[in-house]
Amino acid sequence: MDLPLPDDSDAPANLPSVVAVVVAHDPGEWFEATMASLADQDYDQLAVLVIDAGSAEPIRDRVGAVYPNALVRRLDENPGYGAATNEAVAMVQGAPFLLLCHDDIELAPTTVRVLVEEAYRSNAGLVGPKLVRWDAPREILQLGLSVDKTGYASPRVDRGEFDQEQHDSVRDVFA
Image (cartoon, rainbow, N blue to C red; front, side, top):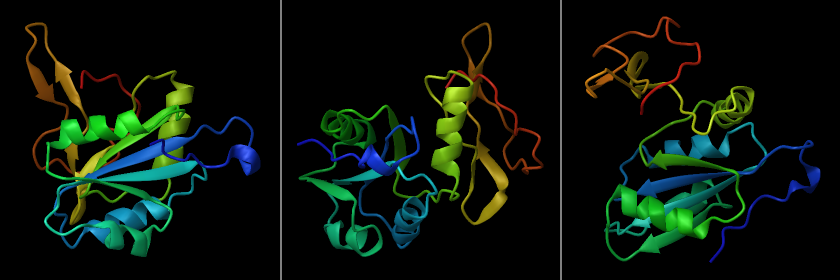
């Protein structure tokens, strides 16, 4: 089954399609906020595919209440995040960009647009946002990893580091 991509006919010239893949397994009360943040994106060429990774209670109705155009694929059991993501990737054909998400994220309304713009500006094959704490958005959780000459991977931010825009420039990261 192929995921229907947005109709490009009314899109500005050269605006590429993006498929947001949300892998969910028994998501908590935050899930509606996750879906609402995807629905609120300022990027018109966004399709959303939710993989229900064997949740005890199917989540199709929860998704539909917030994002009626999202496609939901239910798996019989939870194969893990990686395998569930692979299932989604096998369904998606023709989208130049994938946005891989867990069920506990909340995106700023400009996230998809900014990531696509940066991918083109820097000719990057992979881009990612600054991850901050849900209940304390000034605290940075992750910015990717660096690797030293011995191959040791280390975080680019210190635990509990506050966002003072000190990491707002684009940088190459290992992972």
